[in-house]
Structure formats: C-alpha cells, structure tokens
Image 1 (cartoon, rainbow, N blue to C red):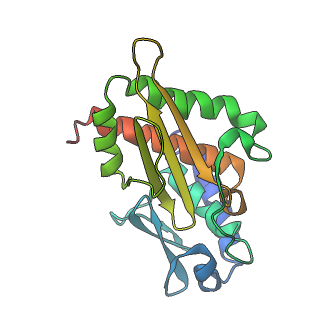
Image 2: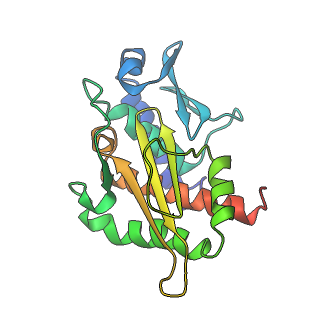
Length: 208
C-alpha cells in the first residue's frame, strides 16, 4: 500500500478523530509515555515519536510510515486501565485471536529472518544492535538472543539458531504476554513485520 493512498489518508484521519475524544495526557503513566502539551511522546524502537489529535510526528519532524502510525494509534487507543506485569515470553501463535495471522507471522517474520541471515549470525547481531537490540537478562541456549523494546510496555525476544551440517537456520520471535493488553493481533503481526523488514533493510544498506 502506498503511503499516500486514499485508504491510508482515510484511516489516518479516522484514528485522529478517535484520538480527539481522548484525554491523552491521562494515559501517559500506563503507556510509559511522556506528556507534551495535549499529546504524548512515545519511543518506537528507541526513536521519539509524538502523537496527538493533530497527527503523528516522527523523529525527523515528518509523518512516519503507515505501519508505524497504525501501531502507535492502536497502542494509545487500546490502553488498559492499569499497567499489567510483563508476564512470560509468548509465541505469536499462542496469543488469543492470532489464528488467522499465524501463517503471515511465520513466513514474513520468523522464516524471513532465518532465511536472510542464515550463515550471517554476526551480521544479524550487528544490525539488531543498530535497532536498539540488547542482551536479555536471562540466558538462552541459542546462537543469538536479542531483546527489543519497540514500545515502552511492549518487548520482543528474537531467538536465532544458525544453520549447521544437520539443520537449516531457525528463528523465533516472542512477545511479553502483556502485549495483548496493549495491541490487537493485527498490530502485533505488523510490529513483527516492522522488526524483520527493518533488520533486512539495515543489512542491505550495509550498516556496520
């Protein structure tokens, strides 16, 4: 979908209208966001974004991508009454209502990362760091384990095993259980796709 398509503009305005009926500063604590005038400052993969009834502004001062806008809209509009604990790491397929999107997530997130970075574990570690990835507190018996914090209350865990003589490369992307309190499943799937797509873009761009 083109960023300037009529569908994008219609959806964008629809969500702005909904934001206009919400007192955004009152959601800041539960969302882990900052307050800026009548809007919110929210970190998305470590980069500052501002969201208000007037629009979404990215770190470069312009409107972010369609995917980023939708994820931020949903994160704000689905804000729970209280911030739930992080909970255990959960695979996408184990979330309620994930069923129709499991094949998409498997193919466009986990299988894509396994395929594009097979034999290049160090490269994956490098671009993951560029995207704000960090070593998780818990140790994992995988070739590479990286935690991302795309939103203040939403974390992701990427577990990667490179190929060897017997097995092809494999990748799993997990989410904190509380993610389902902040995003609907379509947004969670898109968030995973943003992760895989950005990592591949960084690789193709030759980011050291």
